[in-house]
Length: 417
Image (cartoon, rainbow, N blue to C red; front, side, top):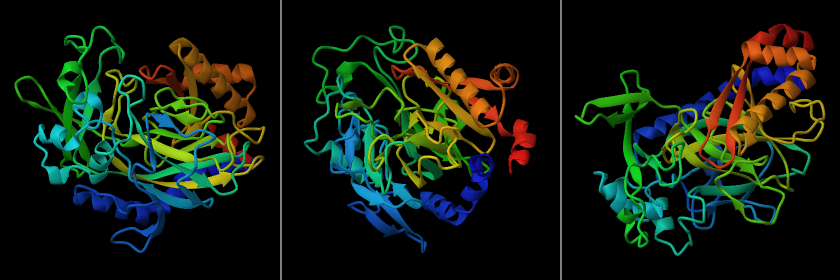
């Protein structure tokens, strides 16, 4: 398969976009990064000569708490191989238990109104319906049609950059959710009169978390101990939600991930990585949201460091049977990822044990179909040399992802060239 060679070279392809990524990264000096345009379309990135496709987050381009389905109309249409920039919004500071008023909420944390994103203010100030208990929290931007995509094809999505739009984010723990429901938060249960007008009655806990540059110029998150001593930690931005429209006309909740992708919350799929999605509807209809500045494996409190980001993607359509598809069948039935160092297999199930089994089975499939192992040896290799990591345990459908080291297979891939 051509895939076996080109899959290893993705990092080089991404490196070829370095000028674009670097120019995007340079923009983060001018917080806040307000929307680049009011409507989806083609724009020239400020300070560059690079023309890209662009989707802002507006009432017309988002879904709040739900994902696109087969009936959702795309907000933009792009050709295969196009580069596209999204301005995405974190839901934190916007949802009802924080008052659905980002200026007031972030103002209470010392953030002036001119440092709050205008698109966040516009959405929360609109009449867009959102039910705190029924709907998902996520603001999902899109979808975008990829021209020529048909069911059975595969979408190759490369994350070229992810720039913070503001210098702050939030980590939240809400009643009945997270890895320790009933234990955390250690506050009274929500009152019956809890609402956007009375947000404190929810009794949820949100930790405001600024970011800043460390001595090496890299972003770090900042929290404090009880006596005010700073605790700092490195960041690694990624999109918690990426996916394609599901092949249903039923409403698709934004919280549980599925074979369409969605809220997978895989922290290893950050800048410089690729995700392959099965196309389930005509046009594929790609979307993204739930931007994270960093997340630990498990996402135990409920949220990551939720943080509005400006991601840049390159999206390529692989027609069914294309040699670049990581499958001997020429198609996929679920998402699969890669980093410069690893192939990433994905297991999903409401039961964490079953999610683990799902990830192991998918890893065996990949090793046998693409890398030529027999099933018994593949199973043995996974036991000896691969790690299976808990993506998250907080989204109803839990996730486990396998990390298969590419360097272990250098003799195989060299032989396949």
